[in-house]
Amino acid sequence: FHFIAQILGQLLYFIYNTIAFHNYGLSLVLFTIIVKLALLPLTLKQLKSTQKMQEIQPELQKIQQRYKNDKEKLNQEMMKLYQEKGVSPFGGCLPLLIQLPILFALFYVIRRPLTYMFGWSKEVLGNAIIKIMSVNPDFFPASRFPFLNDFAGVQGDPVAVATLFEKNPYFEVNIIDAFNKIPSLIQEGTEMINLTFLKIFNLGIVPTYNLKEISANPGLYIPALVLVLLTVATTFLSTKMSMAKTAQSNNNQQVAQTNKTMMYFGPAMTLLISFQAPLGLSLYWLLSNLVQMAQQFFIDKYTVKKKEG
Figure (tube, rainbow, N blue to C red):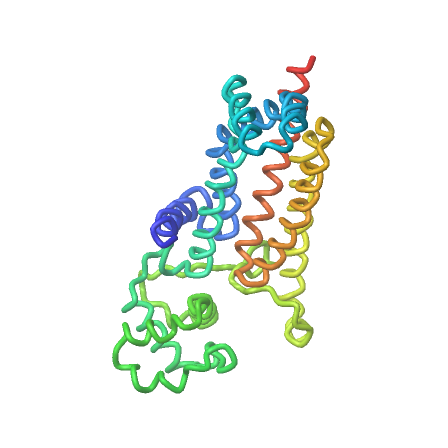
């Protein structure tokens, strides 16, 4: 996802540098809205495909019942029906197939904003680390950077230093934190990003459920947990909304069971990934869910009901 991350990083930086007024959190908000609007035509296509699939469910069930003992004939008749009705059984998957690479590439961008947004080279990153280590090495705690013993051997080579610190995939967040707390580190003309959003959320940290870490810094980690839980909840609600209409018009037990599985699988995956990625990804995911739910509500109320009327 490196190539996609480069594109998304430049887009995010453009938003950050223009309409977001150098506010990182607002950049993610606007980025999410732009991405969802760009995917809206595909979302509408997905909904139309889902509606068509619902319309032919009675015929599909008849074919499944008639050829339940002949899988080859069953597949032939189902494909024939799809062709006659102009339906693709995979039509509803396209938006998801596009959104997943965006999500994973954005994980790279949020984890390493200095590389993907600001275009810092390894040499620039290495020099920044050397400067920080000379002022206050505590910005790279040994608990998270166990390879610090090797630093002395490479500190004369900035590229080697950056390569060494890449063993911790979140080292750029530590650089940003150091530069924000020690402004004297910033060279004239160099811009530094602020990862704090709404004065509450540090979008660079990785959320944790470790009670010792939470109790040591509740102001940092409790808001992060709240945001993660909101992201998981909206993932569940968004999935439920998208599957509600299918459930109403489909009595197929297998489809119902699949929908039920997906309804809980999505939030479970969201929870798992949220504790392995910087909080900025959770913010994107939360906003994406909210926009998706708003789109679904609008389409159901003004498009589907109008058609039914």
